[in-house]
Length: 230
Image (cartoon, rainbow, N blue to C red; front, side, top):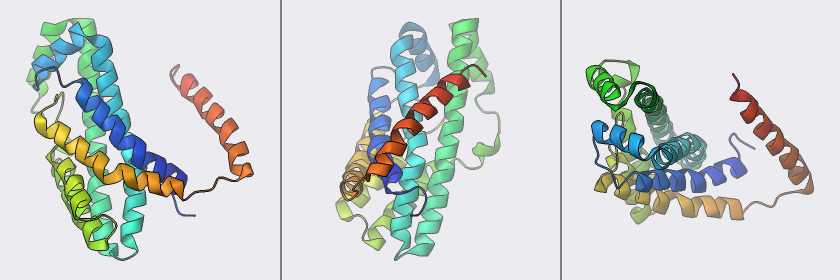
């Protein structure tokens, strides 16, 4: 069995796109740019926290989904698989970095007030960092992955185009939802969720796997709670 395995990869192919779409839709009522996103977070903290957390979780969950898809592509198109997997994964890292800045901005709004937080974000918005030079991977990687999926026969023409639509998703710190945000995340669901369902349907869990999964899940849950005390 190759990492991340069919169970993890198949689940991620279903869960990752759905979480990204849910987060995108949840923040869609509010204007796109960061002052409005900060204002929305101050006025609707529960909704905006859920929206941004869902999007972040989906972004993180996407890495095993991409890893499994790239493995399948690599059977017939190894070079395309390597480049596509590398570019998309770096792009996922970049979005995770942006999500950390989003969290810090929301925290600043909570503790410093909306006006000071908005000024803080505005003053530092253009500051250079490592991912400033790698932002192209956030969009470009999905186009390469879509081409690779089509050339390998892993996805058909329609679902490959749907996958490429993810490359149209706006990027950056405290970015809300535009029409292309919804198009991109819906396209991701169309492209990958059926594949994830098919991968999972092909699996037949053994009694040993079930017995291991239950205590492992409980143990990871306990570790997750303990991690919040650090």
